[in-house]
Image (cartoon, rainbow, N blue to C red; front, side, top):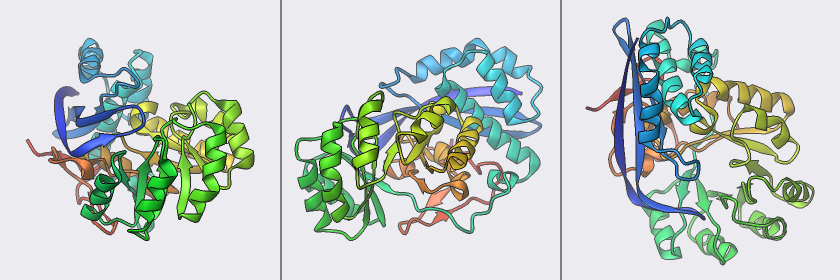
Length: 337
């Protein structure tokens, strides 16, 4: 099995800001696995919060490239277990795992959602993310991209005022993501005001390790709260079920589709909501996420919509939020160059 890696710097349409950082570009790594005339593509973005760069991922994968090329590929799950055994970071594993799943589907001649015995007749609508900025800039972004659901990034001194102003200009559903910037008291105080303003849920308002604070929020918040930074890997799901209404799974953080599928099942068994989110991936990563949407309650897969230019074809999302699935198999991804 041949492995190829390519680094890209993806330009964003607008500066993207959350409570802890801002950026105009997103570095990403594309992994390609080729076997029997078929090539599968996977992706993992760099992330300063988790100290991951494209260079670090290339180095990790490069150290075992000969073993990958000699690997007797049968299923993505067996390949994933092999990668875990080699001690790679979850981000590097994600790029390879997504490529393995795409390859597997192409070898079988089926899209992944069919292999998983799901259909695309019903699925949740993705939100479109509005990063932290001045109210004028946030409004301009909303007007540029009319959408049925907006995820609004907060973590400022005027969070409620921002939502009040944005609400004057749209009837869309709002979701709030504070990216760990609030306290339990702020969350409990803000929740009823935000509920009246049409907010559906709050995502990770508290610091990732503030479990006592989240327990307080669980007992007193009038809005559901979804875990993000508190839910990284499979072992986090059970603990999150005691402190959150649901979890947001990120493929890069957990290590790809293979563990994500297990996390989805575990969360459903525990009776909590399931969301899958993105990390400003190109259409390569977004197309992998899209294969999961029949199994989800919520989805945040707007990453490619935030880019000035893309690097691949695959899943396409219309302004209504409707997902157009590609005719190709696997994740349906093809690189543009």
